[in-house]
Amino acid sequence: MLDSNDLVPIMKHKIADVTSVLEVPTSAAAILLREHKWVKERVFESFFSEESEKVRKKCGVRSRCENIANPKACKPCDGERNRECQICTDDGFSASDMLSMPCGHEFCRDCWGQFVGIMIQDGPSCIRTTCPQASCHETVTEIEVAAVRPDLLPKFESYQLRSFVEINGMARWCPGPGCSRIAMEMDGSVAGDFSRVASCDECDTRFCIKCGEEPHAPVTCKELARWNEKCRNESETANWILANTKACPKCSSRIEKNQGCNHMNCQQCKYEFCWICLRPWSEHGANTGGYYKCNKFDANDGGNDQSDAAKAKRELDRYLHYYKRYHAHSEAQKFARNQLRETEKRMVTLQESTSDHSTWTDVEFLKAAVEQLIECRRVLKYTYTFAYYLTDKSKEMQKERFEYHQEMLEKFTENLSGLSEKPLAEMDRTNVVNQVRFFTCFYFYQLSFHI
Image (cartoon, helix red, strand yellow):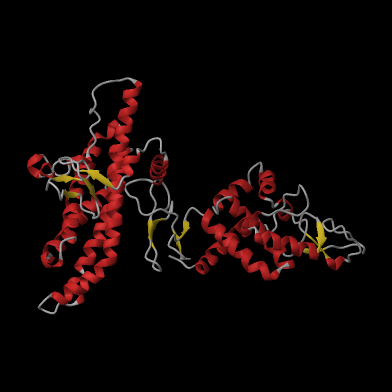
C-alpha cells in the first residue's frame, strides 16, 4: 500500500518516458497517457500509427505536439496593442494582458482566470476541459492553470493523480472509510480473470485490486459483477428469500436466526434442523452419506418436463438454491463480524475467570477463531456464486472435487461457529485451536486457491 504522495514519482516517471521517446511536451505526454489508460505501449503504438494525427486531435494535443506555441508556458500574445478578448469582448488590451494556448486562441488574463476557476469547480472532470474557443478541442493543462491561477494548481494536480489511480488498471484507492492509501501492482500482474488481494496497513481493509470489492475467490470479478446484477433483479428474487424468519418444518413456529450457526433448535418442539435446507439435522452426518449434502443442486429435481415454463421454473429453482445459501452465509458473516466486536470483552472475562492467571496470549485463540470464521463465511458465500456459473459439462470432475471441499468447509465452519458461540464456561481452548489451525485452514485454501 502506498500513500498518494508516493505515487507521484511513479506517474512522473511514466510521463518522462513518453516525453523522451515521442519528443513531445510533458503536458502532452500526460494527456496521451491518460487517454491510453496510462499504458506506454498503447501510446507508442497509436502515436506511430498511420492515424497518429487523428489520435493527437482526439486526445486534444495536436497543436501542443506540433509546437505551435511555446510548450513550456502559456505564451503572451505578440503584436499590436488594443487587442480584443473573445470572451468579454473588451478591447484595448496590451500584449502582456493576453494569453494564448498552443492552438493560438487568445483571451485576456482575467477571463482566463475566471475560466480556470469555474473549470476546477467541476471536480475531477476538469482535467478534460478544452480551450474556451468554441469548437476547439485542444485540452487545457497544468501549463495554463499555472499561468493564470497558480493557487489552483495543487488542486488540478491532485485531480491528475486521482485520474492516474482510477484509470490505471494496476492501482486502486483503498475503499476503507476516509482512507487515502493506494494499492498498486508494481509488476503489472493484474491480468486475467483474477486479481490480487490488497490489505491496507492503515485501516486493515482487505479488497480486490481489480474490482474494489471484498476478496471474492474463487469467483472472478466478471462473475461477481454478473451475480450482483442478477441479485438486484427483483423479478428473479422472491421476497420471501430475504425474510428474517423461517417456519419450523415440524411445528411451523416462526424462528429468527440471530447467530451464525446453521444448526437450529426449535424452542417450541425441540426439533433440530438445518437452516439452509430445512431438513433434519440428523441427516447431516457421516452416517447419511456425508456432511452438508444440501450444498449440492439436483438438476433432475422436478421431472423431465421440457416445456418452456418447466425450464424457466428449473432455472429459477437453481438460482434460488444457490442464492439462499449465498445469502445465508452472507448473513452469518455479518453475525461473525458483530461477534468479533464483542470478542475482546469475552477474552478479558475468560482471562479473569481462569485460576492459573492466564496471559492475554492464552486467550487470543478466541479472536483468532472468530476471524477465521469470518473468512470461512466469506469464502463459502462466494463458492455458491462460483458453483452457479460452473455449468460446463466438461468440468464434472472439477465440480465433484469442488463440492467435496465445499462440503468439508461447511462442516468445519459450522463446528467452529458452534464452538466459538459456546458460553465461556464450556469453552474448550484445545478444540478451538485445533479446529482453526488444521481443519478449517486446509479446506479454506483448497477452495480459495486450488479450484
